[in-house]
Length: 87
Image (cartoon, rainbow, N blue to C red; front, side, top):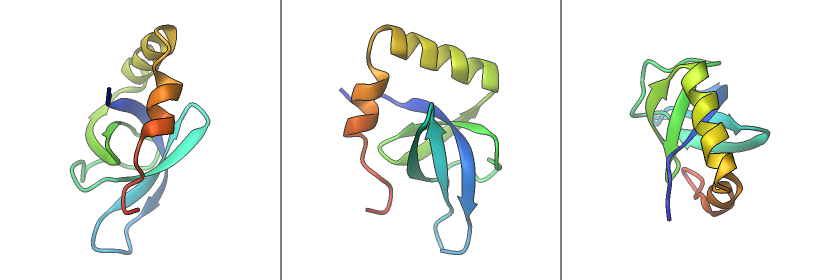
């Protein structure tokens, strides 16, 4: 199964042609493309699927989604299987 997981943007890299960022998923940090969410800024929450941030959401919604995914035991499984953008 491949779920989209919410995380917080903790670092931006806008030097390359593709806008990238490091996203924190409850202590696990993965690099993700931010090309599909050009308005996203440092500290914003995004939904990441297959190494790409695909939408933004507010902090409350992000925490609630993570709580539900953790409750059913899917967060760690998805983060372990998630590909890194650009590599």
